[in-house]
Length: 509
Image (cartoon, rainbow, N blue to C red; front, side, top):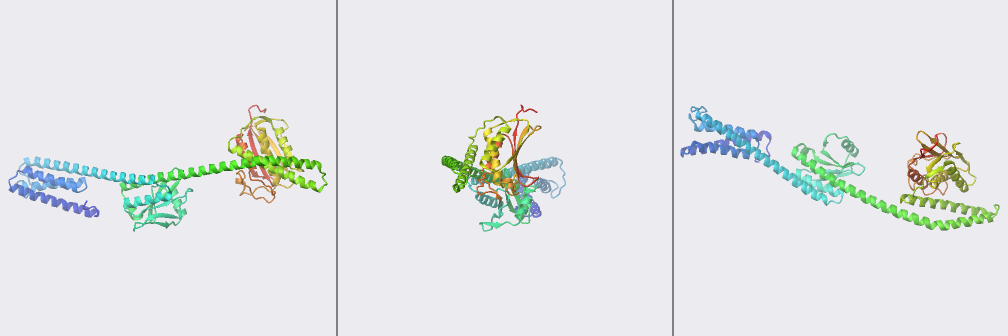
């Protein structure tokens, strides 16, 4: 409209002035018609047409009603007896005035409503076109930065302002810079100040946007976290009406969907790469392990034969004994690697059956003492024998790994113990392995069950392993529907490892 850039007061004054000019023009045309001998009905139609045209040009139903009443008064003033007066001598004119006024009001109102509907339809069409264009562009976007660039251009063009976008990383932290289009039409990166403050305000936001010193910030919410914020300069944001706000929210939703799509795609790519790497690693470990088993078995057998053939006082005995012990260590490591690959590939099938706990513990301790000569192990089991459903070979492997781990991190004269008990209320069997070493640092403790994690311990031997023993124990125990916990001892120095196995109903109380 002509007056769309004027202030509200100027708009009202302009509308009244335009109304007066239209009524005056209609009156002049009516006077011409009267001198030409046209009937009064033609003059009435001129006034109706004037009201209709005026209502088409201006906004608002009220102003149209005022124009209708003013047109009726003008007709009465100029074209009814007595002329140039608002008095009415002929009562029949009253009906004419009423009909004229009602007709003018209805015509003006309908015109205003049609015009408003047309305006709403145009706005919805523009909104749909904007969203359609934005969605098409976002569909082809292959990166978060590209999405930000597209949306900044779309916002700037639609709202005629220097819009900006600040993206968040996958941890929900604002990035160091945000993208904004300047007055020259170029996109520039501006440094972000007070990232922590922005994150705090957005996370604690209770409204649709946050009002800052320079921008209004609208959050872009993803399915799991905040993806970023849309920034509209303060002055332009304060002038936005309801329709513009609705369009902005729709554009933000489209942006969130596009960003989520990129995040999910990137996550799938990472997971696929990790799966490929894990498969390659498992294949490599399995291949190496199988290749090492045969020569290790030969080394162990040959060195054991040489030990039997050599006197203990012979200097060569110690050399052969070291070869034998190193071969046993490597053989145990290979077995752990093979066990790990079977667990990861789901090829390790449990053969659970009721096993006497005392026999399993005794067998594990016996195998351990063959490896750690000169070491003593304190064993505590209930006097009454009881059985637990388990895969005996795997649980024995768990106990052996725990004992080996305790042996590596404690001196030869330090205490190692195994204790077995029953929690009848929870119907579980508890196995606890304790040592008297230096324990594990608080930094390493949360990671000791991770694969290939090896903490630093000054008491450990040079053959501290690859960080597989405890992770294998954890996988085996979880396969038995049990749990395993590792913590430093509270009663003395050392480490305490406890794992649980569920009992069957047949256990005698």
